[in-house]
Image (cartoon, rainbow, N blue to C red; front, side, top):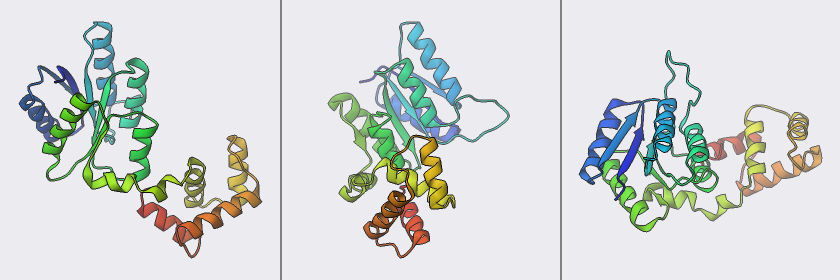
Length: 222
C-alpha cells in the first residue's frame, strides 16, 4: 500500500473524511492542504528531501479568498506536480462530472483515477486507492465510466470543442475564423468552419446553433 499520501481540498469536512479513509487503509504518512500552492510546496519539499509522496488526492475547484494563489485549480496543481514529480500517482476526487473535463484529465493530464464525490464516495475512494496501487491501472467511478467511454464522444476532436466554446461565447463564424488563425488552429476558413458546424448539428441532431450549444453543454463537452 502507498506509504506517503497528500490530500488537497478546501473543505475541512472532506479533508477529515479522506484522511480517515487513508488511516483505515494503513497509510503511514498523511498530509493535507487547503490550497493548491500549499500542496505543491509540500510535494516539492518532500521531493527535495528525498522523501517523496506516493499519491496525491486532489479536488478540482477551490474557492478564492484573501490569499494570492499562483495555482488556483486542481488542473493547474496537477500540471505543476507532473513537471516536478512525473511519476507521482494522482487521484482526482471531485463533484465535477463533465465528460470532456474528465477525459482530458485522464488522457492529456495523465491522472491515475477519478472518483466522483457523492453519498457513497468514500468507500469508492478507498477502492480506487487499492486499485491504483495493486493493479497500476486507471480507476474511474462506475457512474461516469460508461459516459466517458461513449464512442460517439470519442469522435469529437479538440478542434470541435474549441469551435463549440467559441460559438457558446457568441462569436460569429468570421470572428471564430480570425481567432483560430491567430492561434494557429486549422482549418480557419469561414467555409470550413460553416461545414464543421453543420456536421456537428447533424451529429448531435441539433436544430440550430443554440440547440447545438445546449446539447453539448448537457453532455459536458463545453
